[in-house]
Picture 1 (cartoon, one colour):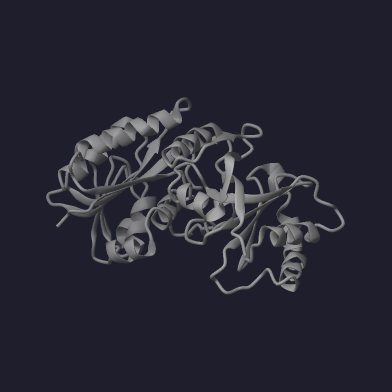
Picture 2 (cartoon, helix red, strand yellow):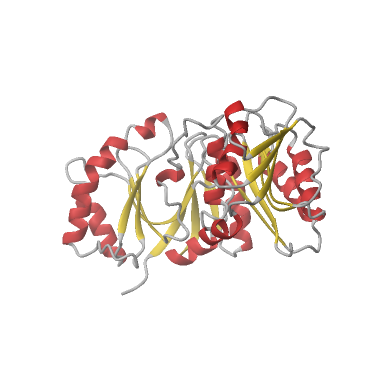
Length: 359
């Protein structure tokens, strides 16, 4: 059976960041020698389509341009077929026929739509449509829940269209539309705790979390007040030194895992190296990047997670500048540097920095 061919890559993002997605896609595609062009239907639609100049095997496209490596992508997967006029009475048959013609079998189905007010109106339809479609796929022998076949990706840009794709479970965001469905803990001091929770899930893999987020570890939270990020670390068993001139949540401090020091996050330094540094200070992104690079270059921390508040204009350029600042600080030092715009981020990007030679 021939391998399914992709004609495009669909990338979902935070509405308003389509230009950044397009710029990043074209840069990454050039580096991967994949010719094509990125375009958004309208600004704030929350998605970008990268049209391939030449059709390619779907798995090769996803490996080269996958969700985990794309900074501004919430979700990304190769498109193998588009249905421009989906019949209102029988939407199952065209999708089953398209998948059969492509020579693809799937192990599960993910239903998606734009993260806009208009797009969210299709949530109910997707829930109702799931049963009939999956029955139709099973009857055609195309749905086999074995975990080995790719996942069928369906995207409904509007009521009349369906975009059909395939996704490797390791390279596709497990949350539909890339929206992390995290519960807000009632005892957390602020909603910012969700940003760090999502960062730890998206920027680290299972083995990294198990290895590096060990109880009894030592962490520093710069700009900690009122304590949302400190709470997240303390819940994982880490002892946290919270640095902020502002007040911390009293209940958090009473738990014994967090110690508050009133000091300037840019000038305070620990007496000895710590396992983790986290930082969500509102400041120019280049200044935060310089601070993170200094802590890592001087072996004050093994790992760091931090937010960069991007300017309204030239957001991608500002991020690349921050990346260069950190890379220059660690010139010749083995390290890992990853960036991701998370669902719980706003006009910002979250970074993960780790020295791999730390002892």
